[in-house]
Structure formats: C-alpha cells, structure tokens
Image (cartoon, helix red, strand yellow):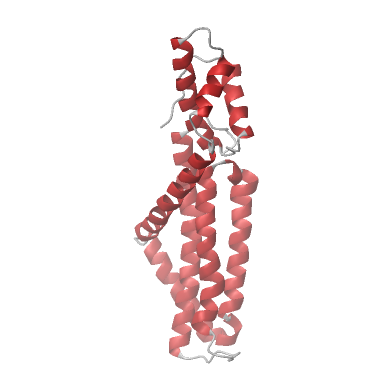
Length: 235
C-alpha cells in the first residue's frame, strides 16, 4: 500500500502530477508511486541545500532518470502487470471451479446439451453463439471499464482488460472455427460428439465470461481502492 506522506505543499504535489502527465505518465496509479519517490528525493535535496528551490530540485531529480525519463519505468511496470495477470487470471479461473459455481457450470452444460438435442443442432451454431457472446462481452467491458471506472486512467485496470480481451478474441473468434469447421464444410453434422463439444464450448464461454467480467473485476476494484486510497473516488 502506497501512502504519500511528505512536507511538500498541496500545490507542489499538484505540480508534480502535472509534471508527470507532461512527461507521458498517464496512469494515475503509476503517478502516485512516482510522486512518492519524487517528493522524497526533492525534500532531501532541499534539506541538503536550502538555497535550492522546488523547481531546481525537481529538475535535478528528473535528470537522474536519464534520457528516457519516466518512459522506461512505465514500460517496466506494464510488463510487470502483464506477468502478474498471466498468473492471477488463471488462478481465479481454477479457484472458481468449486461449488456452487461448479454446479452451475454443470447445469449450464446440461441446458445447452438438452437444447441442441431438442431444438436441433443447426439452431445453435457454434460460430453464431460465440459471436453473440463476444458482442455481449465487449458491451460489458465498455460499460464497466470505460464508462464507469475510466479504464484508461489506471494501469492496473487497463493491463487486465488488455490480457482478458486477447483471450476472448482467441477463444470466442478463432477457436470455434478451428474446432468445428472441417475443411470447406458449411454444415455441422449432429452427432453425440459434436453436440457434446459445442455444449462444452458454450459452457466454457459462459463460465469465462462470469470470471473475467464479474468475479475478477469486483475483487480488482476492491484491491485498487485498498492499495491506492488517494485515487479518484469515481472508481
């Protein structure tokens, strides 16, 4: 948890925030960490030499970051978050596969299997349903992250959405054709195997949709607020 405790004035803290934005640090959570670091370093220089002004101390500290400035730090944090989500997302998926979610998943599979058997296989084409699920996921993502919590403002949120989005593109758009389309065959034959495969696929889609856009985000925003209480209250 990062708590910014410093002697600098409120105006000076706001100036540091504008300074970071001017130097292409757009994520508020990254800004908080850098503000904490910059403030400590500036205070140290001003205490060492009282003739040094705030602006002079800031410029001296900034020079220590080299020619790349803050861009290298931002890139390193982006890579670190990608690595974090590669582990954290799938850990959540495995943790969710327990009662009652596991029971609900089995019931969804039975529902899809029974629907295909009763309505006919051609009424539940895998590509059509996967497209609908993908569209719903995109709408959910937009409403939840962009409109309501300003996803682009926080690296913690944006990195999650980017990784989750890649998985959905692969799973919902590429995988159906790879599994169900055989050569130039346009119609799938209703057999117990194909019905079972499509039912399993639909069930996994619903399960991942729940984990990625309902379960993880609720914990994600709670962690963000706990770790960075200074961030905007609109999340």
